[in-house]
Image (spheres, rainbow, N blue to C red):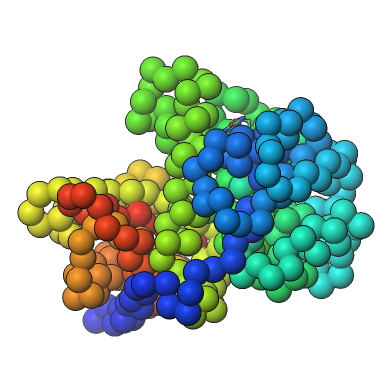
Length: 308
Ligand SMILES: Nc1nc2c(ncn2[C@@H]2O[C@H](COP(=O)(O)OP(=O)(O)OP(=O)(O)O)[C@@H](O)[C@H]2O)c(=O)[nH]1
Ligand SMILES: [Mg+2]
């Protein structure tokens, strides 16, 4: 007998009011995401990096410049001592998060400052006792060894300190649109990286964040994919697409946490049914969280975030 799957948890309507969020843009990629304006305006904004020129176009929020080596040394302090600030920089960052329910670290792994800055951001979030969630891209396969090695060192450290790390491969964009020039590809990627942040803030309120954090931290290394359908049987088609997703890779890995964000005209029963189908697909003994992130003109879009 296969073991029973757990009941899904349904989240709707920003219970308890909207979250107070902080966006920490780390390194070139993180600063570009802050600059490109895909994120809500009413949040704490902090740019971290070693290159002041990448922050020059950011008119809102705080700029924190640090030497890349100092950031790396700070990031490499043992996570066991994370209740104490590892540097003046980290303390200043933690103080800036005062009042936030959640801090999103946004970065492209593999560079000299952003990935390490994201670790320092996660440490600061832990110190100021807000949820610390990182959304990170990993370099294109063609970018070569040293960047990819640095990306994996940064990721290994991040997973120990943050409450969740959602990793989006840059290769995803090349797979979808192979002829895009690199700068356009980065722009598209930045929109993809901002999307889970927007979905989270549209659906999870102050009354639900503790529950979401508790379930998501069971599988902190996360992957994402989106499926949409605007004709009949949308719930069925969307789940079938996610089952085959190359980016979630559910056939070769055992998930430990999962969250579905829906956009579309869906009733509570539809959300429940989606959650049950996805639970069966994952063989999930943990509750799949289903969060409704709002309406759309037609059809259903579902973004799955799955943790391992
Ligand atoms: N998605 C996205 N990726 C980018 C962007 N710019 C650079 N990258 C990628 O992100 C990786 C890290 O680059 P940066 O974000 O510039 O890293 P950094 O931390 O500022 O480090 P250095 O530039 O090496 O000092 C690179 O390997 C590229 O793959 C961007 O605007 N968007
Ligand atoms: Mg850079």
